[in-house]
Length: 136
Picture 1 (cartoon, rainbow, N blue to C red):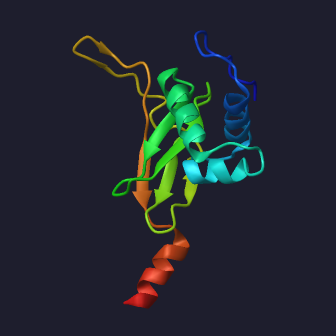
Picture 2 (picture 1 turned 180 degrees about the vertical axis):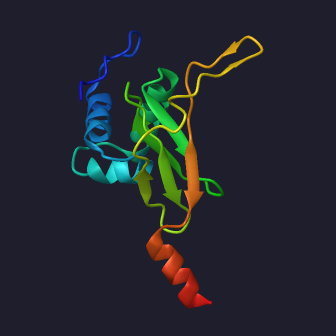
């Protein structure tokens, strides 16, 4: 996968490059604590990670997803090959959908041209469903 082009107007700093590298190596969206823990020992404060992610979001380098019913935000690099996820509401496990279900759809609504989209499915993974059945 080719690296993203660094956006104009966003200065390249060591903390930004460190957070970028963590996101680039991730195989799924990560929350701030996961990013911070992967940067452990590199001298970054948690507040710095938040500021970097805010800057990345403002420059459209990342997509930010909030898990339904929670305050946890997940971040992923915005890549040309976008992905969609099914997110378990029990353990927050994320499973990437094998393809974009909206890809073949050409939507044109009253002069509105769709330029991007995001699709998230919520439910319970196999393990959480089993646990739920055993608890009841």
